[in-house]
Image (cartoon, rainbow over all chains, first blue to last red; front, side):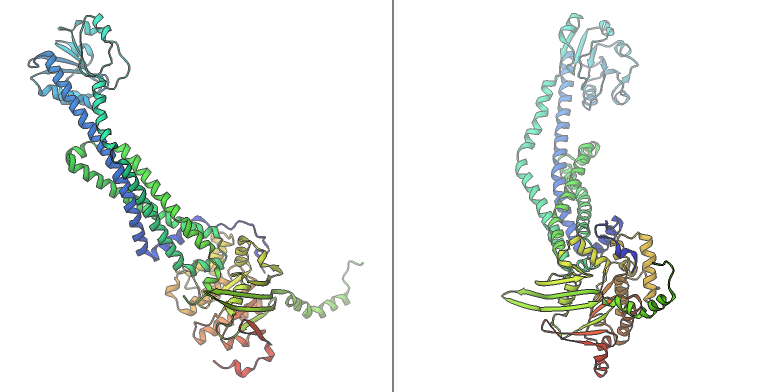
Length: 349
Length: 264
């Protein structure tokens, strides 16, 4: 006989991954109906998880936005009350670092009177929409009645530039709370800290309090739905083992190692988990989007979607879906492994 | 001792050649010792095998006969390492297969034994060529090498033009020839055939029997075939009749009644 019969057991006989994949795809194709049904189990679980998670993200996001818009309106009203009237006034605006709230503040100031805004900012968007752009702070301050400092998000207290000394009326309205009031007083400036971090913090705290309620019960619902998906996959794979006992037995007869059988089931399951999760993530995201659009309106939702946390959560969903599917494959694979190859020879059943 | 070969010694070796060829036959390929197999079926215990002692020599063509439910397939499973006996021992090439771990058993099935089943048992989602190359890939062959050998074997069994066909698109005879090709994939020393002609028409069945017989004679492969088919008996070296889980009688080819052999 040929040389290969003289090889000793123990030599590796692992089947190339591509062969395993093509076998799995063939199996899935030949039982496409049940594969699709199983897939929908995963889709339901994953979309539930995705809808719940991104729904939270969207709610928190838009609650924050609402709070920010409210605070922006409050800030503008405070500027008005400080100056008495805004009609005919020229205001210098220094925006070292614009935040989401900054344009809203300036838009609101514009609405409250016939005011001229001279903006010094690295962000060209601001000057295009709400006022004239100035090349430097001195340019912005030329002819201005007051300076509004909108340094939202700048953490470090910055010294006011010397140009402020020449400001007529000497009003500095700080909307960020990063200046030292005593230092400004020493400069002889009238300083009004109109809007501080403390007030914002209160507003920000509100939505998260709302979200916390009921999240425990929902977590349980999600866990149960994932369990149900997992059990669905396990059940489908067990049926597959029963149906394919002959095929598995034949594979064993012609020398398949248990490893291959385990691989086949795990990969089939993981593929179902992957495709089901992808579909589920898309469905869940659409559901969450539609739900928040009903609450807030399509225009607002579309204009300002919080993509990074949503994508992050989608990746988590995919991972959870695949892991649940692979865990579900453990028991069916074990059953297939324990199966005696002699079953393949039975002509009945 | 002289290094040069003595002419008379050479003659003596030549004279002994037939006997030397026979020595191949004297080696035991398969041996079962008092093999018993019981199945628990609810409250009842089914005695499928009640102590079978069987020795099959290398290169021998052995047929297993007997009525249905007499333990042919069970014995077949024991010899093929597909099932474990309740008591007794099975030796393949002198190795007690009860001592093998699952990995070694899989190796044995892969390299040493080729299986042919009544219902072909091809993998339905794979082409003829893929079915034949699968055992080679299990044995660690490279894809190219496996493909070349697979094409070669399939051509030999007359299916060179059906390489890409899936089992569902082939006739029973063609499927069984693919199964024969698959059994030969790793050049096994033993071919086990369970009713290989059971689902085939007479002519196709004869072709399969012919192929098995040629395999046995030309390549020295041990063939053990369970069969009802009397045509298979005419090519057998020995016919073993089983009855109720025991060996009823063993007949050599020369003892087989030709009249019985002609019954279809």
